[in-house]
Image 1 (tube, helix red, strand yellow):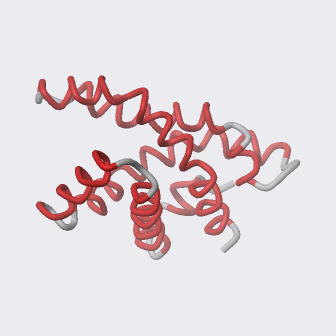
Image 2 (image 1 turned 45 degrees about the vertical axis):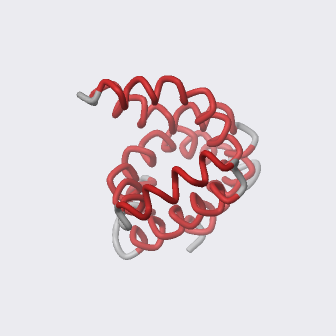
Length: 144
């Protein structure tokens, strides 16, 4: 069986997945409060390609964290992969955040580390809210 990295993290699919993840993030931010919206807009204004570059840089790590979920689903296939992931949103969000947790831990920027740790709980809530859209995005590319 191919890995999620093989299926979604290689060209030509990778570029599409990165672009669609960026759209997903944009759409999620639109539903948030003023502070998140304005901070996100500022980042995108300062460095236009920041979000796509970060998504591209972290995609393989996120797919690696998703792989055990995919493997368990593939062994049973009692639902769609999207439904399987959505039913485990809390666990999936925690696994995806392990990637940013590791990045934050390695950071030499004390202020960034401190801000990340303060925002970690709300980050999980936001990731959980995005899981249905993410699961459908992955499902779409698995079926391609």
